[in-house]
Length: 350
Ligand SMILES: Cc1cc2nc3c(=O)[nH]c(=O)nc-3n(C[C@H](O)[C@H](O)[C@H](O)COP(=O)(O)OP(=O)(O)OC[C@H]3O[C@@H](n4cnc5c(N)ncnc54)[C@H](O)[C@@H]3O)c2cc1C
Image 1 (tube, protein in one colour):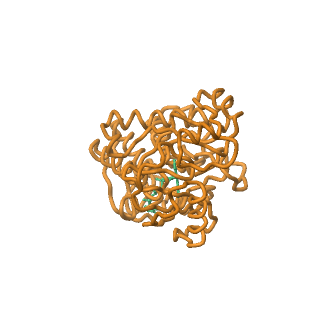
Image 2 (spheres, helix red, strand yellow; image 1 turned 180 degrees about the vertical axis):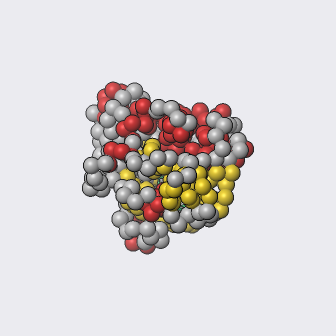
Image 3 (cartoon, protein in one colour; image 1 turned 90 degrees about the vertical axis):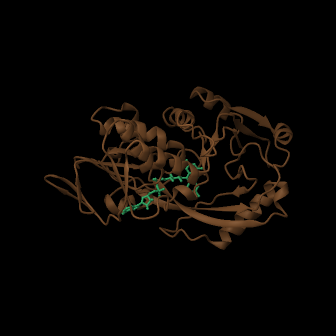
């Protein structure tokens, strides 16, 4: 089996293939992690309530990520932390909706938020607290998944794949032939699978110098890392495949950060970067067999840090020749009737 792309999605698929005893080779064109994954915000979370299928999936995905990291004794290495999140964009009615989908949530008034997170200056009447939301350092998480996959026998090779070609004996990929190919090339996947409805959406993040402890929980825009640095995120820019940060966007994020977090005013920004979210046209992951192409599979999502383990486990069941009913809502075949217009994911993105 060949996997094209060694980001978090390709690495997690390689890991679960290798654990199941499937021979697997990952082709990546450069530095492992040269794609979107290490540029991510690193939240492993449920987001807003988004219906009876996607919300429980995200809840399970958060749990399964933590369970895998614990079993692999890699939680500390990945900087995994179940710290909970505060979501000022949601109203108290979201508590009931989350409860309907089996996700723990509380409404915290503005006073409660101030008491729990004195550094935060939230506008509005309060925020939804999701106690089970977690986070990782994305580059470190990618490293532990890739290392675990390699220990289980997955092989990494540096190769840029210009195209994939179907022949009577299988798929030809950068001079190799395979019966099954998984395209997990993030925003670059549509170059290999024509018609795959995925668009790049750039996100910019700023990193401060280390600061004293400010935030115990994160919000969708701000998180404090174990080393004290604060990450300030993140924008949604439709600029094609250009991952160069825009200074004007960085300035806007900084202004919002200073308005929302008291202690940032005097802080120094040490690093600014941007990454390209692979955004499926309807906001949901695209994972499974590509219609009309025997042996070709795709796996692309804008929420790869959260969903990699969940999607990889189910996709591997399909790759092993069995059914995975849970993947049905995310089937690439749902676009057979044409590509819907790009819209935001059903839950607000990072
Ligand atoms: C600013 C920002 C914040 C985000 N925050 C979060 C978050 O908090 N939580 C969350 O869950 N998600 C978040 N995301 C989304 C998440 O980072 C992505 O969904 C995830 O990283 C995608 O992983 P991937 O493996 O599909 O892609 P990538 O990490 O991009 O990996 C794809 C790999 O394919 C390789 N490749 C591409 N084309 C070829 C080719 N032709 N030949 C060979 N190799 C090729 C690339 O080199 C790359 O290594 C964020 C994204 C951004 C940009």
